[in-house]
Image (tube, rainbow, N blue to C red; front, top):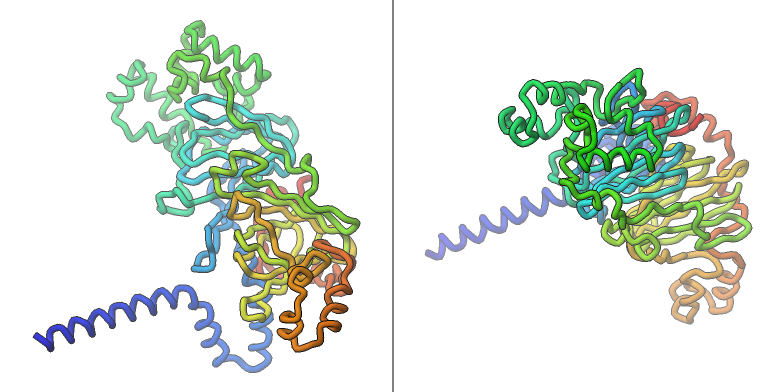
Length: 490
């Protein structure tokens, strides 16, 4: 009996050890791989490898296309993984040609849309109501997981560029995210197609031949043209009407005044969302979009400004658990070293060039990367970091945070820093200096949050050299979207 118990305990200890080791390995695998490489490298190669690792560890990898058609494309940068990621967020980039439609669908993940260029009409279902919002440059808009939506670019000569966060916290974990297309045909396939023909024929009260036509008519992919030359359909006609005229036309369909073609082929009937209740169209109480460019800066001085939108400002963010921010630094200025105590930060450079430094908890440099328009980066919660604009141009970046509460960044340097608040004999003792010397050191910087010209600001030559590298040498994120896909915006 004693031997059996001892054997059982030994087995449990071994199992626990294996489990712990595997968990540890998942988080530290990159370190072990680095150690193995170090043993094989010459000193010069080792130094170069360490430098490259520091440059790119917190720059997110190349984007990959998830949907591509003649009318547009969606690309995605997958969230990093590991224990230090408090909440994964993928970043998506949607490009749509003029007069194109991202067809109706719902996702297992929630979206926050940010319109970079162009204008969009976004329709979605909110509390069983069909609503539509017009979005313009700077607008942010939340689409909950499971809510059917479409995106329309009504412009005649302007591409639409959208940056979005993709929150997989409610996902099925089948992939980064899963689309369920309501509209569709042979490509993409509508979720309705999975039901038997007899079932659908009965449900829609149409003949089998009519059902066959509508279920197999769409072959252009998830993003389609809606001009008459590309898609002469009821949807095309509706999309080209002015908003009031379009709603009147839908009202006619709801009230049974439409002609036979409209009754049988309208997308609205296919959705089955109206059920004879026109108040679902016109009783619109859904949240509006929010324009981040129109919000007063949370902080502003001669060296730049920053603005954040959280759940207290835009109520839909309360439910999403995500916020957004926008920072603009003048040439050569610096966002002072600081810490986000409540959130991981994901960002993309919108304009200009600069430098991002991130520090490990043990006080060693984690990354010192020169970045430019289109690069995507992330900063783990609690990690100290700063951003520095290049000497010749402003540096603007936008991003998402993994909290909808006020983030309240803690600044480590500057007139409002933690050191000022914590200026005690204990602090001087911690640095091994006198109180007077500590006081002079802390008070030397008179500015707060965004600091004037930094000697650390990178010259443009370094970034110019980086542009000339091949795609295989280092992270080039938005460049892989194509010059006319996301950045450039010509």
